[in-house]
Length: 600
Image 1 (tube, helix red, strand yellow):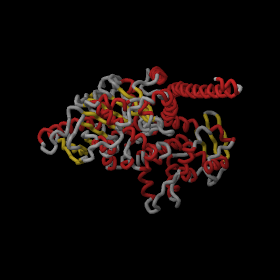
Image 2 (cartoon, helix red, strand yellow; image 1 turned 180 degrees about the horizontal axis):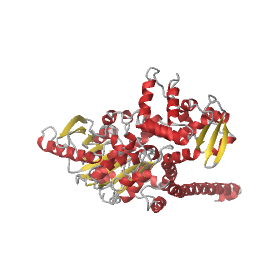
Image 3 (tube, one colour; image 1 turned 45 degrees about the vertical axis):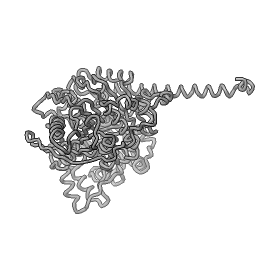
Image 4 (cartoon, one colour; image 1 turned 90 degrees about the vertical axis):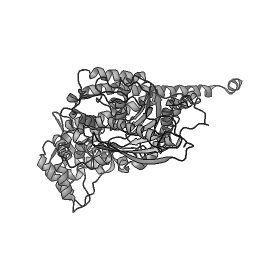
């Protein structure tokens, strides 16, 4: 079961029990909320499962009975009847299967683990595939008791980052919006950094470098032209991806004469993920999924590749003058964003992770929070991985969390652009991008993709389309993010060329007005060099509420969320007042007599 499958199951596990069908001997469910108990008729629940309609008796639970939950309940896993027994046994024996059944047992306390496992086996034998509803129908109990407090607690832990992001979307969209008058200052159209460059003869070659000391072979994809200019651009992919994840950017930048080297990190690429064996201890130790050494090896991969490229640049007739390794702009996504920030001067310091990661479970936190805990197993608790050849960093949806200790990114003084997607449920904006952005000491930009998800910046031809169809970690489709990718072509080129004599010519393309001009109704885009004062206040409130704990309590986060909701509501009120004033002016004009109107 994948990360997305686990989270979808965790979120809907309590509500799945609310939509059982008449296969039960009884026609009721007992919902327990603390000392209170409520009996609910199955026919009302069946109506919701089939039509989405929430009856009066279910309105107490309407907040949780969302279309996304209904969709998750309708999804079925198609199993080959000849293989289903073996597949289910493998899943139940795995750590993910244990997490699944343990979570369901907490929510349905009158069911034992063996009963749940038996129900899963029985449900899997059905001809039309396996679903959560099938599992519940197969439970041999006349009455199913649901501990709604446990279900809500689990759902709250999983959903709180999403609730924060949803409120944050409205605040960032409004407070970073530039007025229409500012759009008149857009750069002249005779220079378009999003258009393909004049160097149509882009060369591409795959190279591999062997680091004998670390026993590591590092493949790289090189894109260049015969007349290179500007800095060397290095691309670093995220966990479970490869060197082609940002291929559209590599091709575009190279067409403008920049040499681009896309590094593939062998310990955390897609192949490493595919090669993982079934491991019953996976949930107990994130480093079994992501080796702890990757937090050291990834930055060292880049430094090693730069050393090898410098030698090629000096000694090879074919590559002579191609690699400007003393002036590097690094563009990284997710774990690649961490890689760039570590190289730019942020010191890896995992000492504070020890308490945060104690007894952590993947269902209770975001994927980023769980994956960072892999670093706890490092023999080096503090490591300086900086490389002064890195002159600029563009970190998109970076994984930061607590990896850099209390100092955070304060040691990063090079120009840095951080991209955040407000609907990114893998690396949620608050701890992974906004707090780190505030810590940066040098020139900085925040590119906010309102409604953007974790993979929105990726090359659609190199992203598994199934990832765009998951209900709780849903990713936007390629056609929905086309404008964002077009913008990133222009922004990445303009950002990289700030290290060239053409810096002034391309600086206007790093403006709020230019970025906003690429917005669509479903994907507003914003750029700022500082967070809005209201968001800064929210971050300070979060810091005060969690000052005495490494892991904020649910109550603290809800209190801070209340403040954020108030900010969002203020924006809505301001918009409503503005509309009211406009309407009032129109009514005033219409009430004027015709001669007065003509005279004016």
